[in-house]
Image (cartoon, rainbow, N blue to C red; front, side, top):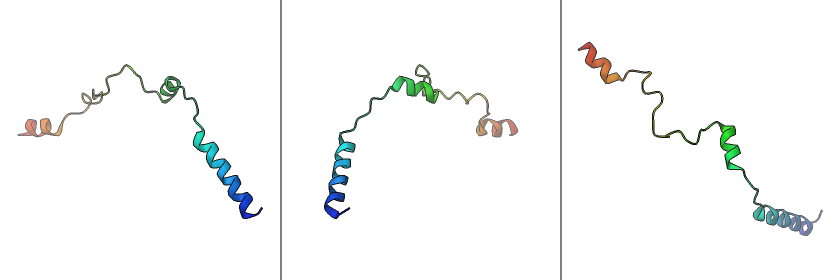
Length: 61
């Protein structure tokens, strides 16, 4: 393939990729990833399982 044909092919592919916009079902993606949408994202669900280091030091003193 000559340089002109190769460049034309790359240009064609680049245009196709530039205008490509897939439709995404975000709710299905969210379910698949396992992230519940109604959970408060600022609550630390692991906070009660482990004691803080400061509390351990106070108990020892």
